[in-house]
Image (cartoon, rainbow, N blue to C red; front, top):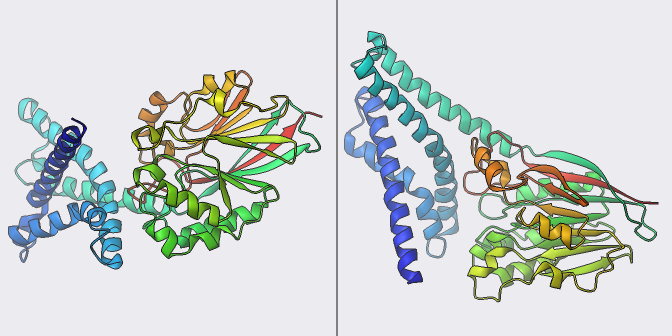
Length: 388
C-alpha cells in the first residue's frame, strides 16, 4: 500500500508539474513565438521542455551522469523552479483580467487582439519575473548577522556570559558549495564565538559534494572554545545517508547530538533532538524529550537544538531555557511566509513562552531555487547573560 501511494503521489506530482509548465510555455509561445522569425514551434518546445525538466533530470541522474552535467542541469533547473513559481500566478491573474474584460469590456482597445498594449504587458510580465530572479539570487548570496541579546535567569557555574553562534539550514551540496561554506566560516570566525550550534539541514540530500569538495576541512577552520554541536534535520534523512552524514560531520569536528545531551564546562547543557523525519526511516522513532533529558540538573541552563520549531510546550514543561530551531527558511520565496506563519507558532525570530525562550532562524542556505525573496539568509549571533 505504501508503494502504491508513493507511485500515485509521484505520478500526480509529474502530471501537475507538466500541466503548469505547459500553460506557462503556451503563454510564452503566444506572446513571443510569432515575433521571432527564426524560431519554429518545434524548436521552441524542445528548448522549453529541456529547461522545465532540467532540475528533475539533474536530480534523477546524480548516480548515472557525469558530475558536471548534473551540476548544470540542477542549477539551471533550480532557477527555472523559481521562475515557474512566479510566472504561474502572474499569468493566471492576467488571464483572469482578460476573461473579465470579455464580459465587462473595461480594457482599452490597445490591450485586445494583440495590440501594442498586450505586447507591452507580456514584456512587463517577463521582465518583472527576471528582475525578481536576479534580485533573489543576489539576496540569497548576501547573508547578514542577526544578533539577539538574551538573559537566562539561572547561574551557570563559572560562566557568566556565553557568546554563541547558530547557523541552520545550510543545505551543503551541489548548489550551496564549498565556496559558500567558506564565506560562512569566515563570517563566524570574525564573530569569534565560544560555541557554534547547528540545528539541522547542514547537508542536503546528496552527501557526495560534501565529501568530494572536502567541506570537512573548511569546518575545521572553526575553533570555538566549547566546540561545535549539531542535530540532524529532515534533509539528512531524505537523502537516505544519515549515518554517512553523521560520520563526516564528526570528521569535520562537529559533535552530532541525536536524542542526547552534553554538559559543557560543568556549567550548562546542550540537548540535541533528533528530527521527526526519522519516523519515516528504518530507524527506531525518536525518544520523548523527557527521556532524552533524564538526568539533567535543571538548576543549570539548558539549551535545546531542535530542527523544526514545534512542541514549544513540551520544551517548556521539561525545563528547557532556550530552544534553537530552523527549517522554515522564513518562507524563502514570498509570499510563502504567509503560510509558514500559520503553520508554526513561531516561524522566524525571537519568541517567548513563559520560561522558555525560542529563536528560529531563516537559515543560511536555500533548498531548491538558490533564491530568497522577502527574507534574508542569516548567521545568528546570540549573546547570553546568565544570572549572577
